[in-house]
Image 1 (cartoon, rainbow, N blue to C red):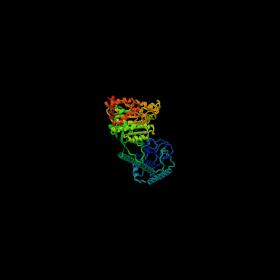
Image 2 (cartoon, rainbow, N blue to C red):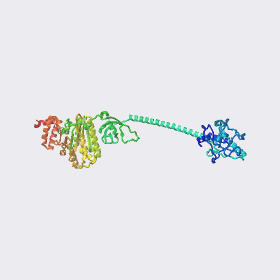
Image 3 (cartoon, rainbow, N blue to C red):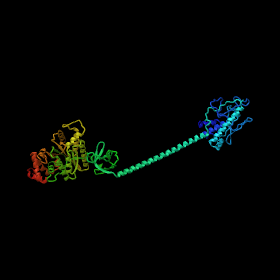
Length: 619
């Protein structure tokens, strides 16, 4: 039974002061009350008489005498376990418990309510009994002995009453048969042990929970401390690694979805530095910028997270700070003009090729020139002499020589003879490398022009660059004569069209070679596309080259547009008179005449003075 049911049972039995008692004490008290009433409960018996609320007798023995008890009412005798003496004069002796005080309980025993006052009752002082119980021995053995004595006294009393009242009629009264109490062998000691064990288990559980919470707190604190230590270590290691950053430099190549700093030239390499597009937007980076920064060093034995090392710190952009670089004007917004300043190529008296170019096909800053040459006409030698002359006479000019689809030995020769930046992609490389080199080179030239510098780009050759774009570019479906895709010629035109003289300072000069008489229809189509785009043309003759007349320049077919902006008026008058004389001659005769006179003079000025003296038209 539960504690609430035991409290209700005690209240029905007339026991008071049981509100603060525990379950074992309530069970013992109810048992003692039953023993004090003189009978034990009979289970399995249905009630025959109606009981009044507030009292249920434990055991009632009705006498069979006619004068003392009737069938429906009478006095019920309650037998005390400690007092088995017969009653005298109809008065009951109070039941004495183990304590000092006396206990009495009064309640009706199945009679009408009007007869309750005349009926004897047994009163039990619960508090006095509880105090006496606590003062008595607390061991389980004493309580068991007491219960055994009570049981034996009850049995003796029952035997005495049964032997003395054989002639009496037993009144069958309701004895709380429906209430199931614990078995008789369940002692208070066992219940107390169970209660103590339960309390101990609860205490252990609470202690375990506290320990678990404390351990969890300590674990969380240790985790936080470990996280702080790890973050501190990471910060320290990051600081250490920032202190040990490796400086890098290269040309920035910005693509659609990525950007790289080419550290080994203009072609992709394994040592390239990765740059995020966010960094490109934040710092205003452009393709072709010369980037100087720093990266974290790679630890030996450590597997890198990415294939390429990422840029950590940006130091300069084209020699400027990031704030200054963002104020640059875009190349497409610069104003182009005709060339108005000549690039003098004359160096020595024996360098005939630069002297011929200065007289008949002058090159100005911002010139867009084509060197039209058949195979084996000496175009590579002409490019080398032009490059050397520019570096000698114009050291302020940034020279870039771009070799596309050329022979490796020519690249080596150009690198050794030209004091400038040589960018090459030999014919044994794929077409995509040719286009990558050309695009990045022209973007680099544009960035320098934005800074106000004069840049000269020598391209060899634009015909082979057009072939590379024809192979690398996706097919548009429109094919021109010779198998040239219509969209393949736009990138070379964009390359060649970047040459211009900038208003306010800076210029981009491009001299590109174009192949003719190769027997390929594609080369003819490419040349025809670029023929009208340049403002300067230097044509070489295969006939002169076969006769070993060098430089094999076709003087009558070579020239520059708006040459009056490059020459002085007196020089221009003499040159025009000379051209009228040479125009009446054949290509070979004109070349031989000019070359013989140039070899006899030490400079072009002396040559022009000689022409002016001997030519009557000049006067």
